[in-house]
Image (cartoon, rainbow, N blue to C red):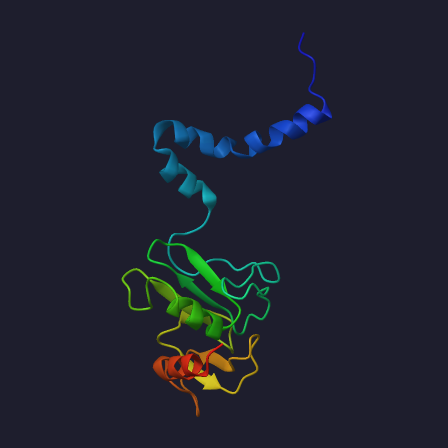
Length: 161
């Protein structure tokens, strides 16, 4: 007769139990491909931001203001999250790739709706108080006083920080 497992044995087994849905595909297909399928993270498009928990890839600040967040998915498909478009600009300037590199995806939150828009096609409203003080809010549609991505980029990089 088998004895029931005790609490300590049950808790020790939990990590293995959480992988159970992924073990079947692992047996028949390459491990890397199967694990990617189980991660739940898409390989393109904006990644899910865990507001008030995820941190900025450049400055380390917690990402909490949905109106100013930005993301870059590098050519390898890894997402990088930022609390301000200025942090994304400087991080990108120090990377081995840029916004024109093939397979690089780049988003910024629309200041009005919070939806993700392509950062290179967005219109930027200067003067908005942003988390890191770069003072640009992104908009999907142009408004009076907005500037292009290139103009916003020149302004931020010239300012430094």
